[in-house]
Length: 177
Image (cartoon, helix red, strand yellow):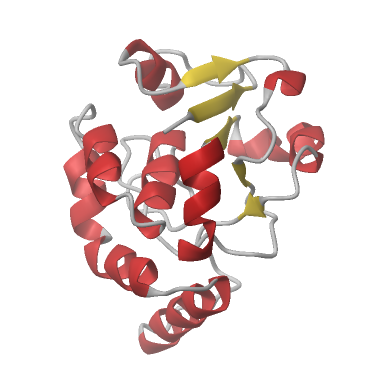
């Protein structure tokens, strides 16, 4: 399983989950946008299509590409988003990383990659990735029911439907995320 992270070098390196993943041998960091592998699933918060089991073969063969940049400056990294045709967004999940604990949809890079693995039914790999972080089990536990539901969906449309039903049942306005 190939995990590549484009690192925009905009974060506190001591808190950076991508740097820690690289030190653990779990990903390859790239600082040049042209080094991103083609055909991989690119995690893109602006993508119209949500990650789903439909993406299993792309994740298996080509891997996942994450973007590590400041959420405040994500627009500056827009060139990143034009690199592949396999862009996917993540459905609603709650962050448990120390910087954004409890915030919806503002996941650390490791949370986003782990969620992608889980949703595409690489659950063991998702757990192994999060094992390297003290709070990693909390992310999987807090989001367990949603991650399970998303992983049982076969298509992006089904993932979005599950997300929207969850948001509606919990009185969460999708514009608030």
